[in-house]
Image (cartoon, rainbow, N blue to C red):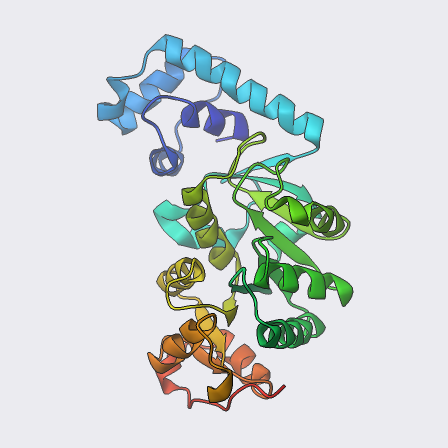
Length: 312
């Protein structure tokens, strides 16, 4: 199924990502993009309950919707990448029914096929200690050839992207909006800098404004693209925990910077909680290589001896 066909299905009433993924998996014989009846019949065959609410007129409107998005993408030099496209990241297919059926990309598209990725995430309200530790850790991963994945938010995300670029690395920013709408606006210049050698991606078409639930949806893609997830700094209930949760569901190994007792703050208390719960690898300034070895093994984190705290 090509990008146009996916967009037509996504534009129909009552049809969402999970239903479209079900349709893609059935490999319907949609040889003619312009045959409205084929789309209605496909839905009748695969999701009959949804078909009751869909008319040929709905399909015609969705054709216009799909063409409009593709025209806007061409104008903005954004590339739509459907689930069956050879550029589609293989690791996102591991997400099953939670896989995005179509993503939008701009920049260095070869990074979509990168598998040596590490997600650098954390609070928007980064502390001085978090800034120092996050900068050090990010630089180490860049020097070891990892592509840095993050969400272009303020704080820890910005540190991950900037330090990566400052050290000649490559980075992928996953947005919770259309690629033509950078949020926060403070990071517009950073987004432009990323485009020189990195990549911006989103699940949302151009002109899509940020919504709160889009951040959570975005988080599953950040973790899904990555071999591991490194938490620079998070409180116990921050949005970072969504990415951690998705990562654990996806079988990704989570690591948290382990701050010394006298440096434990509300903004990094989540790090210690995840370490104490044996949910996350205890990351220090001395054991990055051990964590990298763990990324390529099937070892459970509970089998790993807790390491020391981060030395500044």
